[in-house]
Image (cartoon, rainbow, N blue to C red; front, top):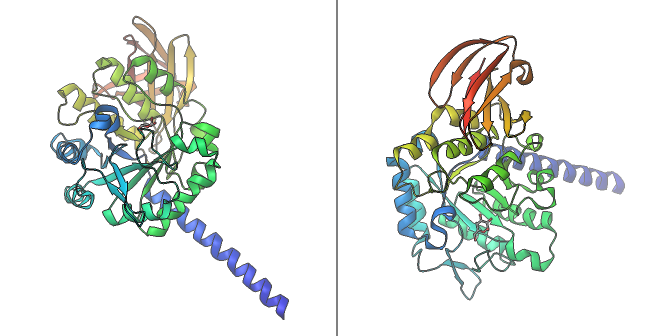
Length: 384
Ligand code: GLA
């Protein structure tokens, strides 16, 4: 009898654990069913970010049409952190006098607020990290009304912590708050995070070191993502880092390549520019509804390279309606003719094509399609 009871207890415990885990994975899936879209302060403002800037960016997200295009998270990156009080509760520094008030403001616009911390004692910029205060910090974020946490490894390196357990710990703390908070892992793709990021509660995980507003760096990261597609899906995405579109270091063709590539990759789309000062070209790139639809497609499959010859590449992402989005890239110096053979992207002999940057139907083509692509540029089409 004693053994039967023991067995029953163990079994019930195991079932309860399984149910809890599957509930938590269901809720993570719902949190980021498609790749998260929003804005982050780091690429443009870095340590200058403040309450006033976040309010301006939230306002601009609406006025510029970014919100209507699907961008929703307004994320404060590093340098908001102040001191801990005698009970260990973290406070924001004087750039952020009232975090709860700021969250209320962002929420009143129909947007969501994100924040940043590190599992180590210090963040990358040397501010207060969450080490030893994980539950307390998660609780504080939830009380403020935070909807997204980027958790950046940095000084945790010195502690020689187990990376997976460390991320799992913060995820458990976030779950305990009862508030849905998107969990963004930032450890630069170490220890092949794509294999375990989802199992420690990550909704997205950085796959590389930091992006820069330069074509070569963006291209190295973006085109280097091939092969990671099997690890992405609803609730858990590869993150090749935030967008640089509009920051001025690349030309229009290069920014179109950046946006096309991130969308083919089903990457999180976190703009990293000043939303209050965008040229019409920047707005057109960031809000192109046909390109965003590729990124956000509900089939939720990350695209991959299907053909390459020297600097010319063709990438394909299958879409829920049975069509394929195909990008013809030219990484070379000087214009180049890129051809996609329909057989290489799983299309039949004839396909109707639409250009997603010029918003024009191109007509019906047989067996292949070729485009003259400018240096560092792209032709992005949808084929069915
Ligand atoms: C690291 C991250 C960046 C940014 C900075 C902030 O470099 O990878 O995205 O968050 O830290 O200090």
